[in-house]
Each structure stands twice: as structure tokens, then as C-alpha cells.
Length: 281
Image (cartoon, rainbow, N blue to C red; front, side):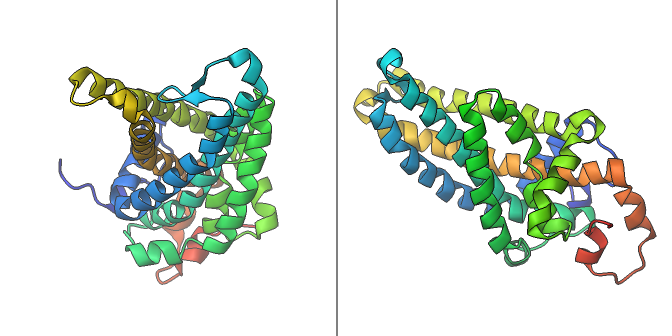
């Protein structure tokens, strides 16, 4: 496949849903050496956090389904909500460098790893992740509330990194952006999550059952490490891909509703990147 340069990641025009998903994958490809190792560490940490709850509800790998759902349903529901919260927090943490990479790509640059990490405002991003995660977990406890929280809070970190707004205003601006054009950004974010959830489930279960079919060893005796490794590996791709989707969704929504593309085309040479991308007040 020919190398598509940085400008191919995010054209300065409104994009279709398919183009948005493609742009997220291209952005991940450009910055995989930063995002994927970081995501792998976070995905393994997530497995460690969820393990005690899985033991509590006696959820066995690879499906993580409890032996007696009727008796353990409250704890199992808590496990699902905790997993939803950790996913949201990890995607938010990865959203910092993803947003910095997307902003540079919009301007025709491809920043190096050091610039990607330094320019991602790690302090505010960590605080945002530790706020978004519990909110999504609490919303997941209600069931349908997860769709609302996950869909609307995805742009918090891109707003923090690219728009230059104070931290306390970032959630409200993110919600407003996600709700524009009939909540298009929120809907695309949910669509992206669904697609990657199916991929994660298929690979996570497929690795276990595939090894069992090969008969190379007694996979049931190694069910826990095999399942944890399989899900951590696929999550190390899925989580940064979803973070990249948030970043391109944010900029595309600003192009679609705020004329960011026009503003960039009229900008004078030499204007610093943070000034170019900052939200107009």
C-alpha cells in the first residue's frame, strides 16, 4: 500500500462516516509506535483491576460469564459497569496524544513521539480521564445511561488538548459539540465502539477456541493467561483506534459546524499551531 502522508489522515472538509472511520485508522497507523505500547500497558492494568471482581462473581474465562447469574447478578452488573468505566478512562488517556497527532495532521505535519507526548497536556488529560471514567461507570449502572454518557463525553480530551479552553469548561463544550447536527458525533462514536466491540469479542474468544481446536496443549488449563493475553492484545489496538476516532470526530465537527477549514485557509503564515486550532470565543 502506498504511503498516505499526513494530509491524507484528515482532509479539511466535512467527511462521511466511512471516511471518519478510515481517518481514525490512518491516524493510528501514523502514531502506532506511541499509542499501541501505551495502550497495551493500560489494557493489562485494566485486566488486573477487573480480576478481583471476576473472582467475586465466579466469572470464568474466556466468556467471563458467571456460573450462577441469578445469585451474582448485582456483582456482575457492577463488573460490567466497572469495565465500561475503565474503557472510557483508557480511551481518554490515549486521547491526549491522539488529539495532538490529529491536530498536526490537519495542518499537514506528522509530529514525532516526543512532541506527541509533550504537547498532549498530560496533567489535565489524566484529570479528565479520572473524571470521565467514573461518570461513564455510574451511567452504565443505569443501563441505557451508558449510551448517553459514552456518546457525549468522548470529545472532552480533544477539547482540552486542541481548543485551548479551561478544564472546567471542557465537558460542556464537548457535550455541545457531540450534540450538534442531530448528535452526529455521539452517534458515530457509538458506532465505532460497536464495531470494535465485535472485533474484540471475536478475536478474544477466537484465540482461545482456535488454540483448543489445534490441540497443541490443554488450553483449558491455561484459560486465564490465554484469555487475558488475547483481550489485552486486541484492546491495545481497539482503544487507541477509538481515541483516534474521537480526535478526528472533534476536528471534523468543528469543520462542519464552526468553519475551522475556512479559518485555517485564511490564516497568515507563521501563526502558532495552538492559536490556529484554538476555539473562537
